Length: 116
Image (tube, rainbow, N blue to C red; front, top):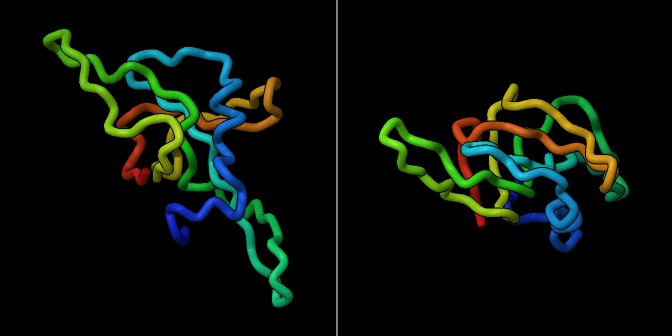
């Protein structure tokens, strides 16, 4: 997975997607722009791969939080732009026509860790 703060020489790759994200998410919903994996050739060229589904990405939208049984809301510990790790089979993928990118929509509990 590498360095959680490495953005592959692209400043805020999540920002255009977050700015154009078309939906408001319910309670504990989280939308993540998956990180694109790449292999490096002997000459140093980054070659995109599609071997496995990414397990990390950037938060592009987040709901208000998980509603507890007493009616209170537990806010998510991360925010838009944070890098997150998530479960392999978490959520489902949605193609965004506005940005041409695919995001993964998941629940707050599917996020296993994060970095700012």
